Amino acid sequence: MRFPAAAKTTVPHTEQIILFRVSGQLFAVSSGSVQEVRSVDSLAGSAMEISAPGLRKVRHVVRRGDKSLFVVNGALHFGLPLTSGLLVFVLRRTRTALLIDGIEKMTTMTRLQALPQAFCNEERTWYRGVTALDQNVVPVVRPEGFLSSEEIALLERSLAPAALAAEVAESSTGSIHDSAE
Amino acid sequence: MTPRNDPGTQSFVLLRLGDRRFAMVAEQIAELVAPSRVFRFPHRTESVEGVILRRGRIVPVCDVAEKLIAKSLLTRRFYLIAVRNYGEKSEWVALPVTGECELITAEMSPAGESDAAYVSGWISHDGDVIEVLNIGALTPGPGARPPARVAAASQEASS
Image 1 (spheres, chains in turn red, blue):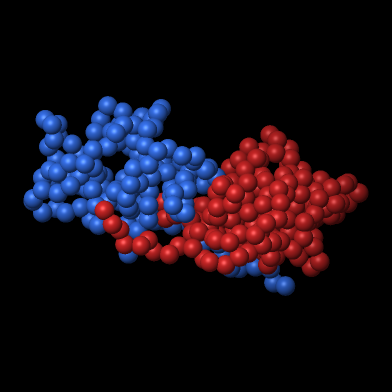
Image 2 (cartoon, each protein chain N blue to C red):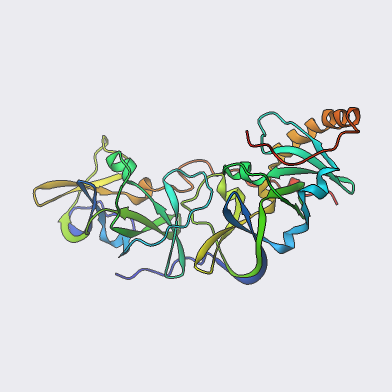
């Protein structure tokens, strides 16, 4: 039985990526998408609590220059068991600071394969595609996929009260660890 | 490679899920492979359990047993790699099966209105009447649910 060649679903180019872990699961992100890598502790002082209805994955906001970045808990975003994140990726050209458990390594991806069409739900927003690395398959995250425009709008509406609350409690020190509830 | 509805014999692959046998039009089958490591990552599509690597392709594994025999497979002997059409594109989909597969020739009767969407017809073989599966209706795809929202460009920071 012979079949016509499958439609090309790969983007043939090399790209530097960072492999990182969230709750034991390996993900990749383009290194060009990561503006900064910070430890949770180093951001704790500038973190402010925020609470948007129905959006558990964001509990903190941090100021970086003239922007407010929303700290997205990677485990909650992907529906993984909650862990206490140790590092934060500040994602370029987004309002997202992604809370992760750790960096595995930096490497080069030679082929990005489109997410198979069988995956037809929210994951199409989460991932740019998948790549095969060292006999493993790793999803490559889409930096813009962590917060939708609706979620950002919701968070911005919650920002004002959060800022006020922060002024009231200005002497307290923030922490962006999420407690495992 | 849509199954033919016209009368006349054609080739089918018989597959086994638990105690039951089903058929697929042979033209829709790429190969039968031994189970290999399933790579799993977070997603929200029910019935896709992960992906396997096959001939350089990343192939989703769709467990269709729940839908067809109302229970999950405890053992799997092979993956039947089927060709699933998505509009003008086609992709491979791996279906776990529990027994040997068999290539037969039979005449298909078209499905009736009361048949499930995943039944494209019926064949008779060895005294059994066997459902011919419609892979397009059986496995998930963009038509199954509205596509997820696309990440908004407005998320980009103003700087």
